[in-house]
Length: 115
Image (cartoon, rainbow, N blue to C red; front, top):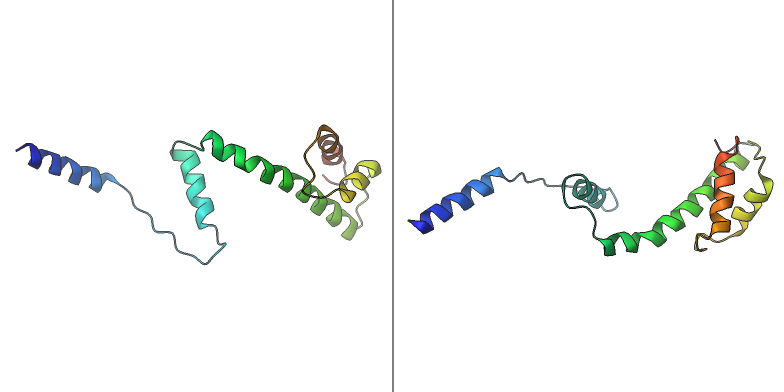
């Protein structure tokens, strides 16, 4: 009787689960969707997972500011913060996100050309 109850409870729990099959080619965002679902509806990221992403976020921050600078140049949009532009333009994306780097990015972010 106990085994039957356990089996029935397991079967009911299995029926309650929602299964989702994500199909797509490589680099199409399947893992990104899974990670987003985990953040929104799961337990979120563990401390170790978050710490592993810090260098990636820093690199992306510098890299994307470089993209904005290049876009301004391509579109002939003037950037008033020339010193900050030159500083970010000359550093590597792998540069640590120091206070100096962050200050220059902040200055550029506030520049009307970047905005």
